[in-house]
Length: 236
Image (cartoon, rainbow, N blue to C red; front, side, top):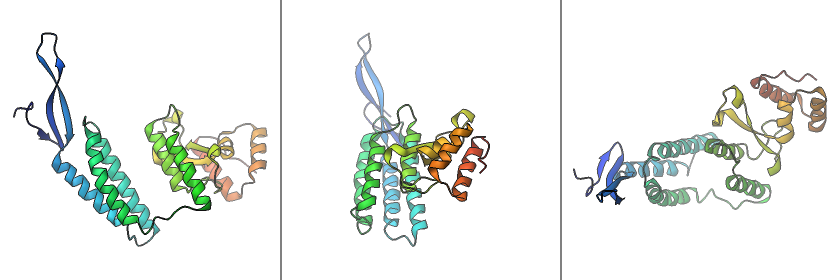
């Protein structure tokens, strides 16, 4: 097959040679341009639309979480596999146009204008999306946003709603000990709790404990995080 004239499909991609400038000797220079293949695009669209439709009438909250988790995992997997294609952004744009219409139709009855505290959480969520932590991985920043949404803006230890300046994303297993930026290894806690998790000086521990007024259950959660960081539990 002449790749200069026709696309060739391989493992869900379609490839073609595209002229780009000339070599020093005057001959045409070619580079590979690649897309998601038509068949693969159709499969992606069909599965994404079906998952979106499943969100319309879940039996309970747990099923809602499972469906959303499955949808997010599918989208992440597609992005990871087809991210090598040079023109993948154009292909995803076409797919997302149709999927977004399905999502809007499926969730229309469940989408409500946020009020009060919900509006505040939404504003903070938008802030986190627009202001990623510098010098951190894309995975870290994505999971930071996911945890804020999943925890409803609350500290994982105290259960208190956090202001934007209080939000700390904690590695359960420290990076220095081989911990990664995966969703399972991260959690959001407020700034004082984060300091308490890592504190070692007795005076610092006493000051933070006096400010936080933790219940025995909450202190147990702190000690669990300290144990994962290989620090001694706090005795009261």
